[in-house]
Each structure stands twice: as structure tokens, then as C-alpha cells.
Length: 262
Image 1: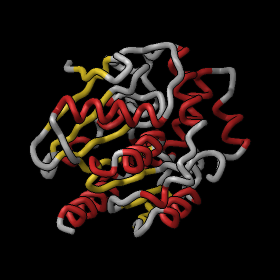
Image 2: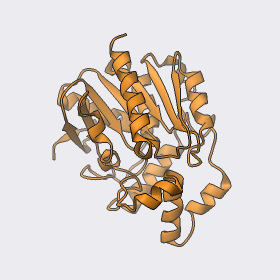
Image 3: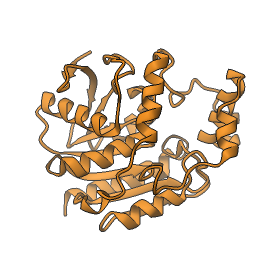
Image 4: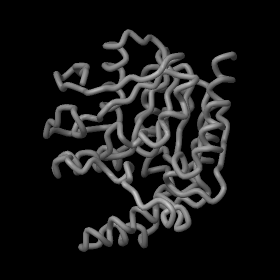
């Protein structure tokens, strides 16, 4: 698997597939590129897709040092530089949406259009998940905690028809220290003051029934980013992009196609 080298020497694994204008797909916290496996084909006809394994996950190096969403964004730039991609559309979901915010703020010349899915501006100004959700995820029984996460990601109806395997529950081979580093990076994210500086055409996508990252964050982002479009997916939970792939994916592709012609 090819790697790019970040400024601090960390090797970042990346994957490229398809033809067409480049589209960077950014996964959620503590996940590698496999997060996108169930839906990546949906973009093949219109884009070449670029994914990466965040530091601490997959085939990337796993330094035991502080991680940040800003640093993850710089790792994405290292991958784009390695590939010779000057400008790309960017679609980030969950923590990947936080990383995508910094990409658009810190490297505006590299981001042609931006999609922020099931994400937030950060803890300080965002709407946090409820204590009941926190308790469900912190259960001492790993099987119970895993089930709680599944039910936050997908509706009961979808889970009944799709027994797995699931690619959105975290990289199972990830070291415990790296998992903690990812959690800290996501929790410390705060792009609120910088969001009005985003220049890229932006769409914010969120499931209306998302309790893991409450849907109220979508309107906060859309109101904060100049000209941003808001698209809510009725009845969807956190993994709206997979369960509601037909409608959500089409909306994203339509937006990206329109943004290219602005």
C-alpha cells in the first residue's frame, strides 16, 4: 500500500480508486479507510476517490504523541502533495467532517468544494450528545457497548436486515493508546471562530435522528459557513451515508457536480 510522509515523518497510507475529478473521503474517529467501503462505489462514475488511514489506524504509522484535527488535515495535504493533486472536492463525515473544516480553513486553495456530514463545529459551541448516550457507550460489557454504538449508527429496521460485518465501528487493530489519542483530538476540535473564513462551496448533511452527534449541529454549521447549503436526511441516524446511501449519495453527487460548474 502506498504511503505519503507527513511533516513529522509519520507515514500515512492512502488509497486511490476510479477516474474523474478527485474527491477526498474522510472517515470518522478511530476508523481507517474501510469506513467508506460500503458506499465508495457510488462515487466511482463521477470521481476518483482518495481515502487515507489516519495516523494511528490501518496501515499508517501509529506514533504515541498528541493528535489533532488540524494535524489530521495536514496529513491529508501530505497525501495530496504525494499524488500531485492541487485541488480536490472533500467529503468528511463525523470526525472526518471536523478534519475537513480545517482543510477548508487552512488550505483554501486545495479545496474546490466541501461536504460536511454528521459533524459539528466542536464541543465549545456545538450541541453535545446526551448523558444517556454517553452512558450507553461506556458500559463495562463490550458487547453491550458495541450494540449501543450500532443502534446510534443505524435504525433498528436496517440492523434487522443487515447483520454485518460493519465497517463504521472503529479499526479493530488500533492500539488502545491511539484510540485515546483520536478521542482527544475529536474532543478538542474547535473551528467555530474560523468557519466564516471558509470559501469553498459547502453542503452540510445530517440525519434528523442522529443522537451520537445531534442534528442541531447541522444548522449551526450551515449558518456559520457563508453560503452553505443544508441537507437533512429524514429518519437517519449517524451512519446516514450508508443506510440512506441512495438518497444521501445522490444529493452529495448533485451538489459536487453543481459546485464544479460555479
